[in-house]
Image (tube, rainbow, N blue to C red; front, side, top):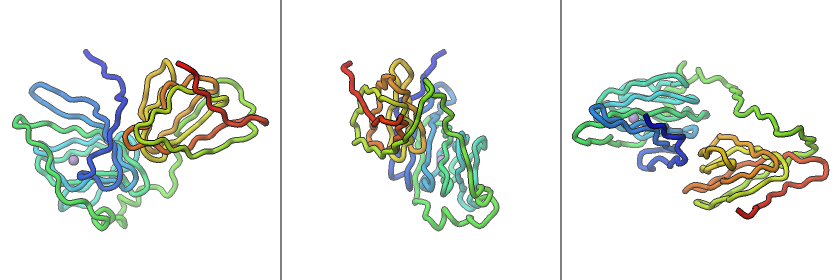
Length: 251
Ligand code: MN
């Protein structure tokens, strides 16, 4: 048995395969007779693959959000967390997010013995993507959704008189480095991604829509922008006469 911990890198999907934005986290590669590649793929709202086909087909398992999938000649279908999509060998198709909601799916792709790879075709145009917006499947997306992203107990009761919201941009590849805040900080990623780690805990990769919490006076080991940089909103909880302070202690 071997346990691979949560990957610390997600990479932008290759642009020739994608319209909009998508990120790939490799999950597992199965060897032996039934070789397969398993990835977790996250599409920003409106993001989708180009038309393509896989030599031995593909299985998609939607793990979060709402997406769209279409096989050549079929309708554009809405898919939700928990749905599984079976794509036949050689079947032309595309998959991606709903227009206003991101989607994450596992992509399980058997790898043929001869090493043949997936074949990319034309991009999915806006007309194709929106073709069936009037039908029930698309309208099944409720007009308002509310999701609890974080329900966080603070490390100590906090007398909050003020909340300062900042938009923070970190250049591609720049490591935020070890730091400590004088109050609790909450944040949500707008674009790009970062590796986030509280000292002594596991690292995780934050992408668009992900939220995080940096406890007051706790050493944050990493907030490191990945290749595409990161833009996030930070919410600084402050008492009456505090201003946000960040300290970069010596290692
Ligand atoms: Mn596919």
